[in-house]
Image (cartoon, rainbow, N blue to C red):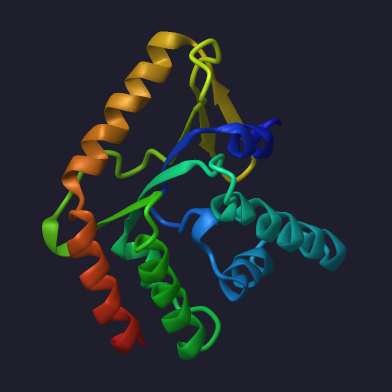
Length: 186
């Protein structure tokens, strides 16, 4: 699968996962906690951790090639108990800090706002700087990643992501909510 390559080459990444934080926004402690629930052996988990931390570096590129990231997270993804309370608070504070970056748009869907579009539709959309390179959608599941390239299907996922994004809190409201959660997260 070419997921990491597309992620690296994209000009814009749009990501929504209903129950898990996007990998580009996870702290090391959070990555480690997620990797321990799978059936993987320690050497594989170590390589996966290193790979994810390397992948996150694309957001730090200072040469003008860092992709813009539009991420929608759910309040549900923040409610799982993992690591220590300090680890969970650090993850939420990290999200708030990432949301302050100029190239990152972070929005949250809250329980209090009720059902929303895309409740079971994880989606990653990669748009590339060259108009000759069509957008690609990746759908992640427990056992596979599906690549979607058919133009009308890609457009349908873009419309779904737009509805999900529009249903979420605005970036500034999300940031304020995250700042509050980073102090109170249990």
